[in-house]
Length: 165
Image (tube, rainbow, N blue to C red; front, side, top):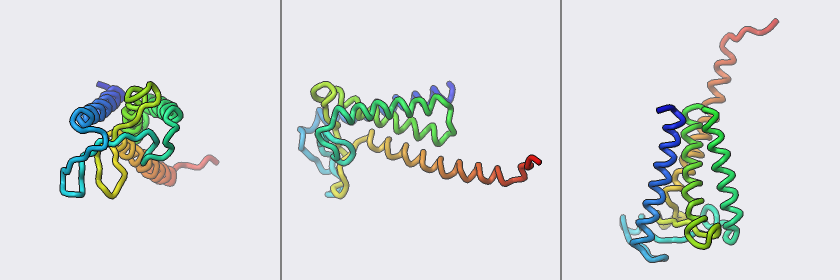
């Protein structure tokens, strides 16, 4: 299995896990219902989000879905270019998370105007889901890769590269 096919498999696994957890929430909790998991710190809640992250941009579901689709295509293109390990892994997580939420926007309600199922409810932070977590982890990996790749390139450039002369 090549590096790219492993990234594709990982992406499909993340989307599958996201959709499975959302299915379990939707089938076991009514919308708005919440159950304690760990005291009042962690609850499992069935919340619908028709906006972007943290409920911003409500009412722009079609535009958000289009943006997610463009983002997925761009991140898939990044993976196809065979980036470094952290960048490829980060791009995979971002694309998989965006895909998981895009599936909700396309099919959980009127086509293209559906809402995302959020369920991890920490009470002090807006509710989120597996896809949101994947996007966050992926973005952090890409940022990390950007800093470490730049430092590595700078170190390699300063190590006795002969100057043309």
